[in-house]
Length: 407
Image (cartoon, rainbow, N blue to C red; front, side, top):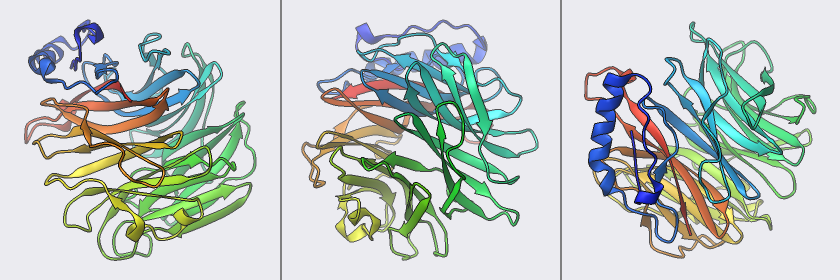
């Protein structure tokens, strides 16, 4: 699939493999290429993957004046982790690199940039259905440095994420115990892959906890946010912290029988924090944003949160980043019939600075935006996905990764 912005941004397709399906897919994509709406005062959305089959669950990382994206890709007949580096102007700095080569399928990578290397957290799914969270480091040319399973026992583990703090890596994941109860765990490693203390249990998860998000506070604490049905009627939001070996966990949303899902968290350099999520309390899936001090964001947040979206469609998959005192918030909404990506900036108090911007306008579904601070604005990456017709196998889904910037 190709999703093009202006002509100078076009990434032409090579058509190397799976020609019958791939070419048909791309003909449809080119038919709507001219429909893309450019991000105001930024870089227009452009395709940076060349899967031709399925590229999903993008993760975006920034360090100084460079960027990198990671995703899982099914072009090889097996789900594998791929990465691609971007230069100071947000253009491709090298080829796509396949990092995983195991017989198991590799899903949902999360990336952090290291000096001359990538740190990746992901999970593998074996042919018998067993899942195992993983953490590893690769050089920038794709040469493996080290990798390992992260676990506290023999239970199934999944949905690993990684964050960098100087010369250390924080990894969080979900793992089941002997009774198949799932919990969120976290631990620290150095850049050589050596553990820095024992893993810590951060809170109860469950079979409806589908992802984790995390941020390192300026004080050095690791904060992890997630939703879980944990002694609650439905999924509610939780935040857990790990500082040295001390842990805390708090529920952020009321046990009201209405789902609160998929939180994300970020910190400003001065320690102010923000959390976003989508909630069904108004009878529709809407995006919310709460800001405050770190202490305030350990307390119930619903009454202090700003409702960002008011559309008739479903607003989901909200992610945020701080750039100085400004918050960039991105999400997907399907009011137009398929999902599109939207963006809005806020000040540190959670007040909108500008109207909502629509960043995509395609017949495909623009999903799960990742966002990072970038120069005087924000960098974003997301999936452009074509779902198969009703009744067709899920393997017929197609997707590619696109990248854009906004100011």
